[in-house]
Image (cartoon, rainbow, N blue to C red; front, side, top):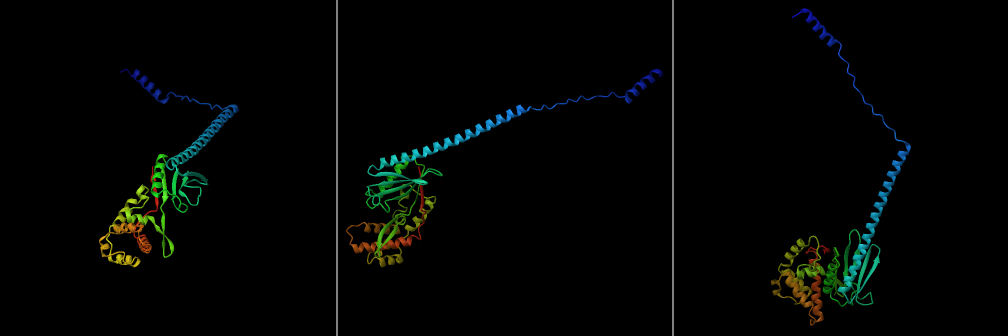
Length: 299
């Protein structure tokens, strides 16, 4: 190769390495545009209007919902009163506002102290609930409708009026004369010994633990009458029970006693003795039977 050409090529390469071309990066700068005061005020005013309108709309909805809820509750109570009047045409159904609830009376006459057949409490909050306060209790001595008819017709009225839930506290008593003084026989004990469950239980008003209590009580009332119990019974009722009673269960004994107490031909002194037996059984089995007083039924 020609030496002259070689030297020229080397010189060219050397020049290329020693003096590289400078590359300039183009930097694009974005200028921030400042908003004018009038535009800022306009934006703030617009946001304020939207926020204000949103609050008014929200408050309006709450007020509307509250009004609807109040009207719904009033309509439900009016419907219940209407159904009660339909089921009890012989009674005067009287609703009375009492603070946090409405009380509904069922009267059989104008004397409120003698013929009150039932009393109901209507609670609006926290949910619409009816409390069955009592049936023929303190002021119902002249109410001629039977308790069975009352509870059946009340239950029908609750169902007719689409009542969501009815609650009650079963503290009902039947008063008898014991040693010349009134004594309250607890009706749940009387009916469990007689039927295996309380009077209200038989019409669908039960507690959360009803089934377990019913199973426990069934074991109690299915036991035979012991000789110890027979001896105690005869201390309260002379010559009322013989040895044959030991072949009975507790439930059969109660049915026998119930028949005697309802026998209108029974001499007064003998009926008093059978009543003493009833008091003894009430005291004895109040400690043995299981029962939850708070009952409810959903419709």
